[in-house]
Length: 67
Image (tube, rainbow, N blue to C red; front, side, top):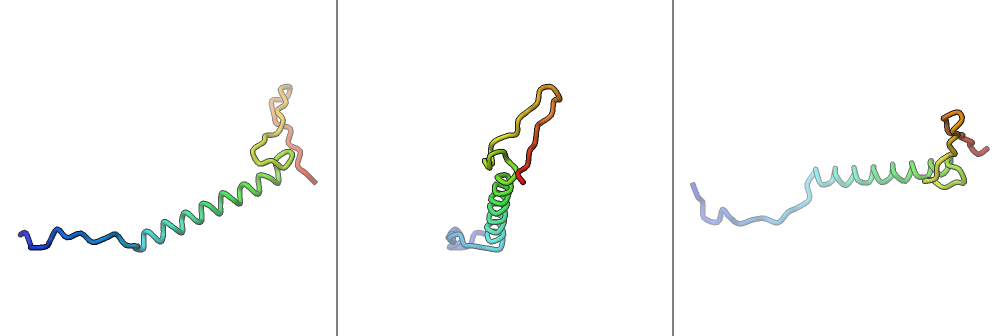
């Protein structure tokens, strides 16, 4: 049955799922920052996006960690 005024729409509001989504985004951002910082620790020259040298003779990477 069609009720009068039934098509009035309410505005969107925050709910539990919006809050959980916000917490998840914060956790993912913190994890990305943490992994970037750890990548700088083990990467050659302290640059997180650089790679270690590849040795064609042994088919392995030469990983030299800082002391």
